[in-house]
Image 1 (tube, rainbow, N blue to C red):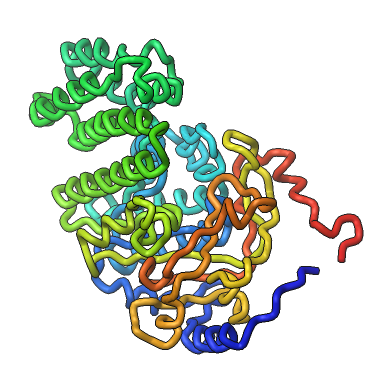
Image 2 (cartoon, helix red, strand yellow):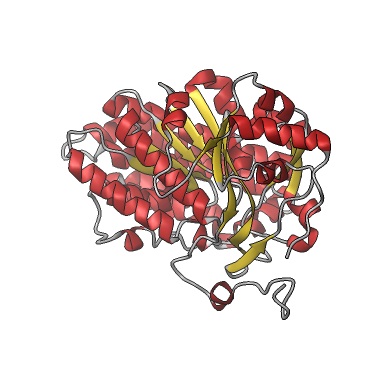
Length: 453
């Protein structure tokens, strides 16, 4: 049994204010009509998560996304995932490619953490998206699935070369010579970053820019050529070349400090989101995009201590550029289980999430006493005003270390400035990986083992 610190009187007043404004989300089909009203005609809906391994975050995010596609005409999901891996999923949901099922379409997600996209909730959503697109037909408003992240330097180089070998043998020869700059490091991008970031080796910056410039210059010709390459393939190749350029800079920046590499990564995600929206605008009218990523990427960084330390993020930039045309939605939980690793590159484990620390937003939301609720944050209501003072907020990534939880997983934030709404699920469960390890199957022993009290 977990002993909680008693809620002070001032906190009790806050809890009552939140309880009066919270919109309960209960049952197998929660009522998201208030959230859809909040979205209105916005073109960008950013759906976060407080961990990379919580079943309810994936499930509710997918449920909301289905509603946005069916009722609001959204036609793209852009995820915190690598571009080439996600594009294979895009081909599958659009009825292209050779994959027979969603499991196969997700099989390029081999890099750690595999469970982040190879899990049962994503599998179900990908199958639903394929069925939806088939139901509206090739001339209807189909929805695609795309990646925003930039870790796939090597596989994006491979994708650029496959495209150029098909489209332009001379350009392929030039690109192969330029990309050979990376051969000394194999596929070890961190070793490349270390060697070039500290000045021990020449960077490949010039070469990757030349490949990108060459491809962009000839792209219209590839699309117009007799037996021309589909515009979708050209766009896919362009984005891979852009990713190589940005990833090269990102890996060089990794050893300069967190803010530098973080900002490059989130700036790349925003650049990719913008390029995707422009492409879809040309293809099917005004693009409407749902973004899936961690709260730390999608909540406005200016409202957090990380922003004060010099970090920016996707939520901040999208809000600055699009204003009310963007809706930022965060997720939170108090306790339960989560799929995470103990160290980078480690196996997936099913870990117990400790109850939230006293004084945190999550602790306040637990005291509300609802299993789940939606709390809009745009109004100047009593609850929203009271929540505006800085508080602790929890963030679990792909690693969870409960033994150092305060230092490892909490930061200070002003929630109403960070998000337009928050969805709280009080008790959550670990997302189920498609490849389950013994550590995941067994789970983590409770602190009270062997007494079970």
